[in-house]
Image 1 (tube, rainbow, N blue to C red):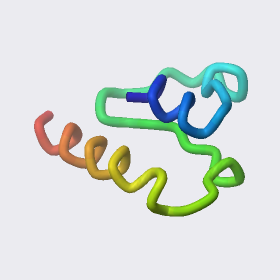
Image 2: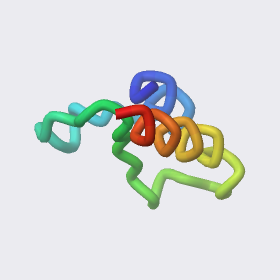
Image 3: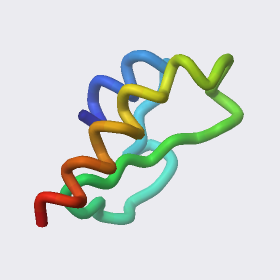
Length: 53
């Protein structure tokens, strides 16, 4: 999921932060987001993955 988000926003998470993400966690640089609609599906999916744990 992080890779998809990186491609959508045009940057690589690993280029900006070396923190290891947990399951259901995504890293979003908000300055790269043009509209909330771009990331809502990823936020929803991360939320539901967190509930499964």
